[in-house]
Length: 178
Picture 1 (cartoon, rainbow, N blue to C red):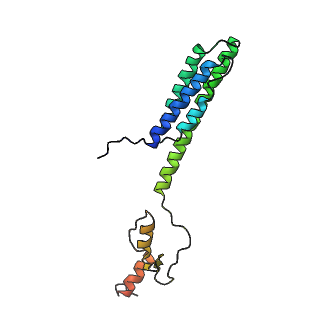
Picture 2: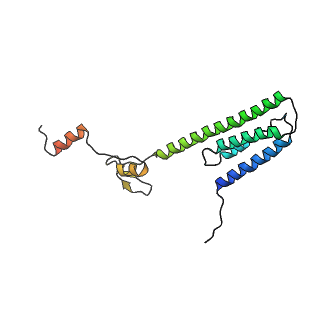
Picture 3: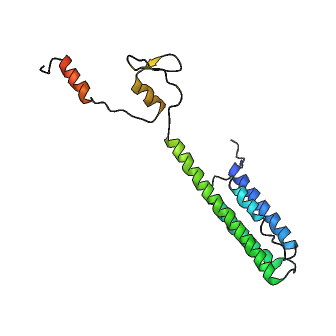
């Protein structure tokens, strides 16, 4: 038995997010404070969308926020303080805007996928017998309408009789007086 650990695509995405975050932090810590070095964390948020983990963009945004604040204190001096604070604030705004929009996108895609899984629709032209209403399948066999629809959708049937057919059936059976 092989005990090798194989990395899942999700762990590769998380590793890529970590590597990108470290690289962005190193660059942000090296450039003067007047530059909005925290903005590239948006890339990490967008990369986190590839993960099936629903909340990963939020965690990445939290990490980007913390690293942006830490880089503020570790970067070489430069720029006027109000501009530096404004640029850092813009970077944090951009990170969180990307995270929130990413989460909304994930939620919409999850809802769409759930809706598509619920809907199983019949499409195209269906060959049906004009007399008995049987349906011809792809193999050329004729199936009852109910069986065909049940097989190709999530619909179920319950049978009953409309008043006209019930009256006709009673008349044919001789149960109804004329």
